[in-house]
Image (cartoon, rainbow, N blue to C red):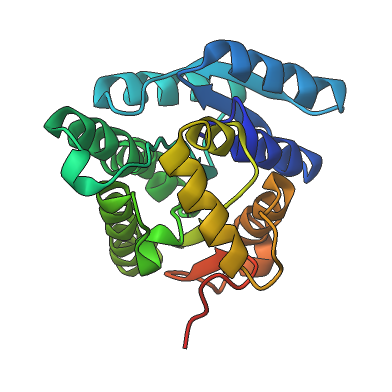
Length: 244
């Protein structure tokens, strides 16, 4: 799984390890990845920290090879790594657009392509991608991020159609505002704090989500209970958005 060094990714790693999976904690933050690895091992699971920049396809392919060498074939891919900065679109720079697209759109595409040959050869696999409710409904201050997350939803739906013949399930989890280090970083800026506070006030449960609540949804899609579910988008946002 990617982005396992902190926040939602760490919670997913711990939950899947508790369910019996061997966990490759792939992250550009290798120190955080090693901490998650140790947490998994302390709980009795098996894990390996993998240093990777998902915006670099060659690096992703190398990380997949490392994972296979250390843990065996990849049966589950969780695309969790992401990055954001909240500011009005008219204040964005092209360099910011490029960074957002490289991490949030191209990154999961790289990871999917890198694992698919092995999953096809094994005649099965699970891909669970973390998108965002911003990709379903838009979000003030997150124009390009929202575009990336919406693009990933469409990408995963297409993969679900193409890969069903190989018994590969592809699904998406869309968190709403979740209490993570990234959110705390975003809210250090006045504009970011204003936006996040306004969104939380519109959530029916009137609170942020917890990383463990996102992890539970991922664990369901990764489990045999979801063997006949593919191409689906599950919002875990306290009712912030509701599908018709």
